[in-house]
Length: 144
Image 1 (spheres, one colour):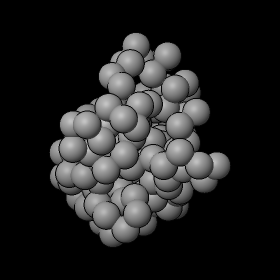
Image 2 (cartoon, helix red, strand yellow):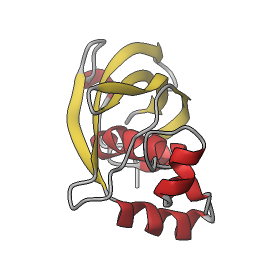
Image 3 (cartoon, helix red, strand yellow):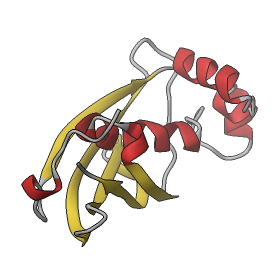
């Protein structure tokens, strides 16, 4: 699969389609099984509160993975992401109810980096409960 977005068709300021990702306790259990990260702060309210957290929190890497989906869905090829990094600023708190939490992600092209390599930088904003949960979230993407 190759990137479906043409470099020539993208300009600085291009906004990617925003997305909202629901997160429930069941989501966290499935992610723990897939990742091998069974830290009890991601499933035990008693443990999470015992270490000073407001409640169970989503795995940081899960939050990071959900955010980059906005980019991979836009470009059409996960392999087009050349580089990706974030700073974790706030946890995604996941209550024990049927709703859970929401991770809301927006993104826009902030720079055209290399005409020959057809790379752009995409800046992402991820929030949950009206708080920014990822800072300095940037991806370098190779376009068609």
